[in-house]
Length: 451
Image 1 (cartoon, rainbow, N blue to C red):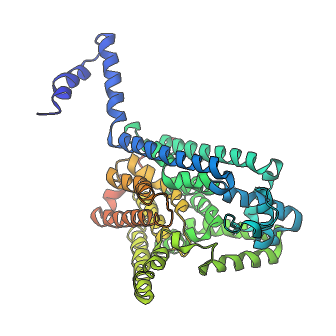
Image 2: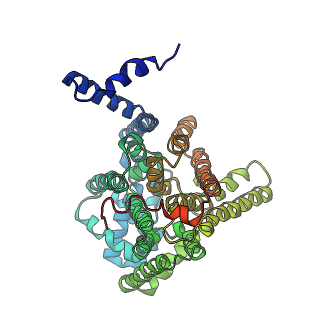
Image 3: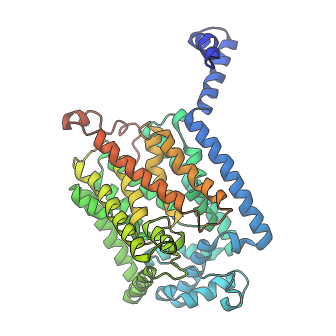
């Protein structure tokens, strides 16, 4: 039986009627709303809502049973403790994990970390002093109230920025996967632990938006804000050189110099040296690094080494790192023009590759991918099935692993590699003459004069 007989024989004729009775007009409005809600994007939004609800209930049950500190807020707690240490002892002492751990344990009601090592882990704050200054207002309230405020601001930042991006790029509601992005696993994971990623999403999004409009210098300044997590820039910096995006690179370097100068002013050389030492410690396999839960080639090597000889495991991982990085950088070599209409694809592929090859990468960093993914899916350039794989796969893997995070990183890792592969194939298939591409550039750049 033809399942489309009703829309073809009844609905479409009614929709074609204009200026008819109010009943027909009302039917037309309801039918279009129905079609929009259950479009492919609507289905992804609904699936994400269902999976996020289940995940949220699991976390809520754990909080009720074991307390807040065991199931949520650990990163925010570290920010709050870092603000206290900086206020009392100076910024150089923030990188002293023993001192920081004492302040963190005090926040959750324990006097010494050694009394509950099985449940408590000191969370470090490997950020430059220029960024640590921004945590000082957290001292105005207690840490639980502060976590609630921080979570509300983080959720508002994600939601509001996606709305701004939707409005400024002309994304139609029927194609918007905004709800699914807000409820994606990297998003809720960042909110759960109180990470800074929601605010970095805005920086990455402005880099994307301004870069597509041709405002390279300002775009580079926003990219420099990602120095909060410098590992996110390991491919972007050489990519800008390859693409000859000199003004964008100048903006990045300007922000980098400003951050370093402010860090020297507030923390001195001692603070920068201590921060560098802490960053270098991530090369080890300590409890802070936790490479086994990383969705990158390093994490895959660590897990494979338990099943096959370590030499073979690391050979596979290093080869994968090189191929992934080369795949991402090739995007910029193919698009040297200053206003590439494929800039969003370049950004998506490069960031996905960065998450896969960088030595330190956790699932929550994937939230930064939301901006280019949201734009490309909303403009119909990214296939819905690929967007669905990136958004839904981590949830399904997490539930299949019985809420065991050590098994879950495989899904986001493969999803990121899928984005890299799609970006490279898209560039290969859509190679067009310069004059043809120029006619389609930045089709939305004058829609809303933001920034």
